[in-house]
Image (tube, rainbow, N blue to C red):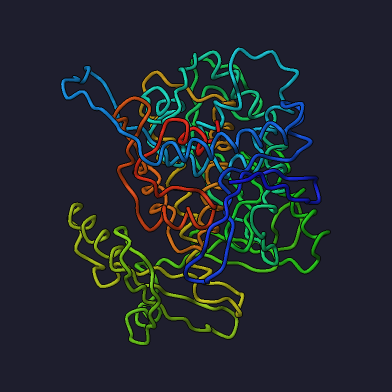
Length: 503
């Protein structure tokens, strides 16, 4: 391993790098073991970053040689304590890697340096974002308190949590802008097309949104509308919340103006889970260039149902939950020379819908189970992009609803404007990280599959500071290759794991 110094537009970027021989390509290649950051940023913490990290690399090389053949003694009489949870998750480190690549740790340091906080807001925000992706059924800091992660972090009081929500909400516009501007150094952002998705969420809150910030005994139902702007690959760019016609911020509008300045040819599409009302605008009078929406198969007219059930399907390959290659059937047509319609058939979806139908006692519509239909006025749309876009958006909605339901079911939890806004900020960043990881893996895997693999990438202490990893699959292997991380080792020291997790 060696310290690599790469000149970039923002300065010299330091990374611990290793050379290896690629047997397939028969050439020497390099992979990043640990990205460290830009030299100027590192000087804030280290007087001489290059000398410091060259010594770190030397220590790592020395440790690697010493640890190649370690003898471990295990005390077979060691007993478990009540409540002991020995399995520790390390998969979150893959999302933490992208989080660090976006320099979100630097964002929080630079934006909150002048605040007197009794807690580490960057660490808290990072854990909440990662927990939302991996454990959506956990509350704000439940995953931390359960000790699921390899890193140990103390619990946080309700008062500190409320304080953190206020700070997060105050900085959410800057946070959206920061993520978009820094994401371009990690992957290519295709903004030739942008999609604005519209979804609604109901909250029972004291008072009303957004002006009433004081809880009281009166609880009202409030509907919040989420407008999520994504690029051509479905990776989030910005979002807005609105209620009763009042937009709580102008992030989407400002981003749309920015995209139009940067690329006047960018086309903006409205998206919806079902055919929307006639809405020619994206936001604030900005003209929409088109639409894409879901077609309800079970309630469609007879002509459309006949077309869905007729032959003519082609086959593309996708991976199921066991990482086995299975077919996804699809076909398309141009409808009335103005609209391109797609229909997809997924056997797993069909089985799930049939089980749900049987449990509810409904027997009608069985033939149409498993079909998903999408329509767009973009006659040049390919067959995979609409399916990929809608799958990602619907997954995001499920995560938002699953996490929200955990609080709704609590008799003592009270939604406040700050909590609601923070709920969406955390969800936005979490979904962005997962979507970016999906893009880095060339969209070979669904976000559900990626999340499951990261949950299962765990280790257990076997003796002293030596840990054994218990799971590895094709998704983790793809992460290793795409991100340059070393994930395949079965045994690792505590120091090696800490370096993988970059702390």
